[in-house]
Length: 107
Image (tube, rainbow, N blue to C red; front, top):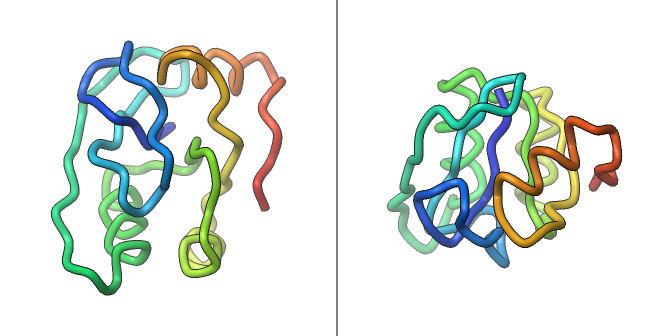
């Protein structure tokens, strides 16, 4: 499964500026079909670990985000998840870019 940190709950939403503080995570299956939108409500501390734990529980192995902080990068690595740069006008564009092999690894 593929997750995109996004500003909205639809595949047409823009990628979020930050991974762990993204308002929504959009989940896509390995073929690029939209599965679901998930919001993440966490406190000030532990946002990266909470986000990674939530995504891992959904079977996500690839995360698309504009950038990662050090805590997010460590949490993703510990969960054996890969991160790639979210580039594109929409979350769906980011997934298409990843599936085409054009996405740039963040780790």
